[in-house]
Amino acid sequence: MFDGQFRQVVPMTGDKMALHVGTELRKEDYRIVAKPETKTITRTGEGGRKYQEEVTLNTLFAEKDTVIPKGPKAGETRTTTQKLGRTIRKEFGANSKEYKWWEKNQTFYGEDENYLALTNLPEYSIVVSRHPIDIMRMSDFSWAGITSCHREGGEYQKCVPGEVAAQGGVAYVVKTSDLEDVGDLQGEEVFADPDRDIDGIAPIARHRLRRFDNDQDKDATGAEGYSLLVPDMTTYGKKVRKFYDALRDWSYESQVGKAFEEGANPS
Image (cartoon, rainbow, N blue to C red; front, side, top):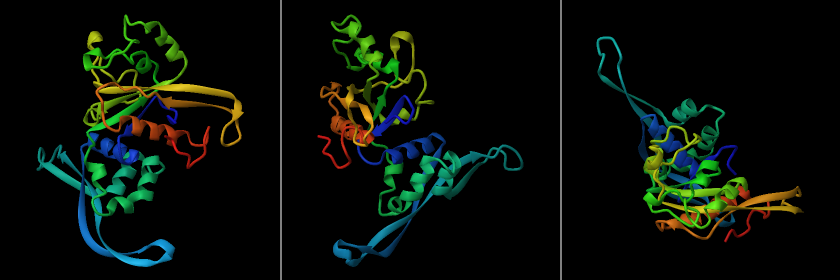
């Protein structure tokens, strides 16, 4: 569910990959722009019935300003424009999951205002982590309004090393705009710690992800034994709407094929 990484970014709503691609392109100073055209297209409805619908189809481009380094126009700003798909291929690679996602979804994001998912940041996102430091610090954010009995000096501080050893997880709500200042999401530390003069993201709220192991039953594919990460019901810090719902859905979608089959109700 972590794709071999320590941390994943999960949007509160919408397409996780759209948030990822849009964020990474903005880090490289690209602007995504749309050139719209209204067209009538044929769709297929229930029972195979064909019908026509007028839609706005956008051709999406990526623009980037660069300063001419030398020559007669040295110092002037030049704007380069190319189709968004070409930019995604250039920045992520032809065989990347990002480019494969774009090839599959470019028609959808070209319709109406769907492309805004690439350009308009949601206010909040979730950073889901299994990094030992993030788990160890789950209640180390009293300065940000997040604390519990696992805090330093708390009643259950002694249990924190056990939580790390159990290889569970933790999920933090952050401002999406703050993610653009993170150089490497898989780095040693991405969250701020004023006590140690470490710069980073200030979390707003958090949930624990508890690990459950079952070595007696087969998973949904028939393999022996499985482990699950299940969100705890308690939110610490600010009450952020849809936090638990988004985390629960991500947990379910990332673990389909283990204890439950696709189509099961995650609630």
